[in-house]
Amino acid sequence: KNEVEQSPQNLTAQEGEFITINCSYSVGISALHWLQQHPGGGIVSLFMLSSGKKKHGRLIATINIQEKHSSLHITASHPRDSAVYICAVRNTGTASKLTFGTGTRLQVTL
Amino acid sequence: GAVVSQHPSRVICKSGTSVKIECRSLDFQATTMFWYRQFPKKSLMLMATSNEGSKATYEQGVEKDKFLINHASLTLSTLTVTSAHPEDSSFYICSVQGGREDTQYFGPGTRLTVL
Image (tube, rainbow over all chains, first blue to last red; front, top):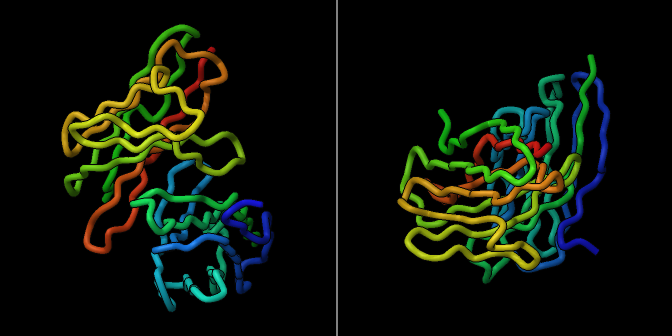
C-alpha cells in the first residue's frame, strides 16, 4: 500500500462543476502539498497545509490531521483547470523530503 | 515570476554521451535542492537531495556514479547523467524549498531523450 493515496485517479467534469480530489496518507507528516502539473510538465505548488483550510481564488484545500486526509476542491471548474493534481506529504523527521501520491488526472470539458 | 529555472528544457542525445542539467534558484539561496525523475503518467520519484558544499544524498536504488550531482553554489545545482542509455529517458525535475512560507518550488523540468 502506498503511503499516499489519491482518489479518483481520473476525473472528467463539465465546465462549472464543483470538483473534489481526495488524498489519504498513512504516515506522520509535518506538511502536505497540493501540486498542479500541466501537460507540458511544469509543476506549480498550489497549497502547503499543516492544519485547517486554505483558499486561493477558486481553489480550496483542507486537511484533517487526525483522520490523515486532505481534500482539494475546485469551484466553478474551467477547461484551463485540466491538469494532473498531485498530493505530496512531508514526512516528520525526514527534513524536506516529499512523498508523492500518484496524481489525479482532471479533464474539464465545455 | 519563476522561482526555479532549469536548463535545458529539452535534450536529445545519443546513447553513451553525458548530459548536464542545471537547476537555478532565482529568488533565494538554497542550501538544499531536490532532484526527481518522472516516467510517463507516473508520479515523481525522488532521486537525490543536493546539499550545497557537500555530497548529495541519494535515494535507494539510484546510482550515484550514474547521476552525478554538484551543488556548487547556493543558487545552482547540476545533475549529470553519465553514459546515458535509452532507459534514462525521462522527465527530470528539480525543486527548492524556501521562501516566506518555506514551501517547495519546482523547476519547469527537463525532458531527456536518449536515442
